[in-house]
Amino acid sequence: MSNISSDVIRGYNDTIILYLLMEEPSYGYEISKQIKNISDEKYIIKETTLYSAFTRMEKNGYVESFSSEENGGKRRTYYRITDSGKDYYKEKCEEWHITKEVIEKFIRSDMSVKGE
Amino acid sequence: MSNISSDVIRGYNDTIILYLLMEEPSYGYEISKQIKNISDEKYIIKETTLYSAFTRMEKNGYVESFSSEENGGKRRTYYRITDSGKDYYKEKCEEWHITKEVIEKFIRSDMSVKGE
DNA sequence: TGTCGTACTACATCTGTCGTAGTAAATATA
DNA sequence: TATATTTACTACGACAGATGTAGTACGACA
Image 1 (cartoon, each protein chain N blue to C red):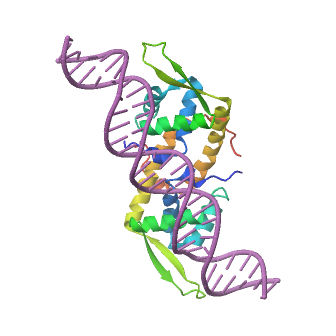
Image 2 (cartoon, each protein chain N blue to C red; image 1 turned 45 degrees about the vertical axis):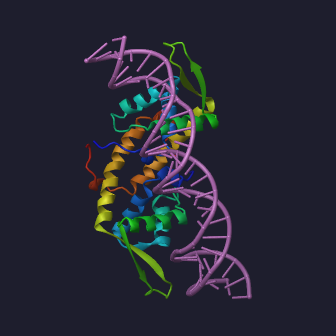
Image 3 (tube, helix red, strand yellow; image 1 turned 90 degrees about the vertical axis):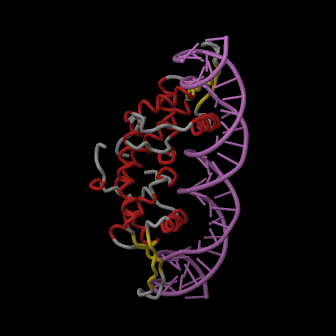
């Protein structure tokens, strides 16, 4: 129903993006559509959040960028995940299980409406 | 093993504190010890994070503070959850299930070591 | 007497998200 | 053919929450 904010997911945006880049190299617009689709419209990442994540991750060495103009002439900046990025993704997956368990100790499931 | 950072839990610190305040009114030091114990030392909230959360939540009307000097003479600032705080907690619980589902669509469980 | 545990407060900095705005090419529609 | 919409970004400032560092002060224990 309600769509969640980037702020709630903060710290996992990079992970989400890296997950998609593990399938194949991609670019901003495509990634944002995939996040929207996969999350059933529940999470729509802001453009600025997405592009700043790319910049940050390239700086950290988790992704590499390259340009392509093969298609139609419209230039895009593609990103490819690096080995370091894969390691980081893996770490985040491990951390997620711990984080989830911790948070759930403080969530009363009887107070929330399951499903939607 | 590794203990998680507040940043990952960002947006859920208030929820965690409110959960504990639903049991009974409490104060900073006590809350921080409870978080540490309940999370099996996996999450140790920073003092500054905790106290700024109190200030923010009091401003938002989720908690009310009161002083007590009954015990030993050592003064403490206690916090009590308000009805508004209970509503907020409930909302956050509902949001959590959505957030969790969304994030898990981007987590490869085969890449993470279960248990620890 | 000094250290440790308790119980905070103040303040400056950092990081990631958000809002607003603007550019520009490609494609759809009228 | 003209215009609107979609695609694909970039720039920049604001903001909120977390962090680091530091300092205060009282009580208990050795």
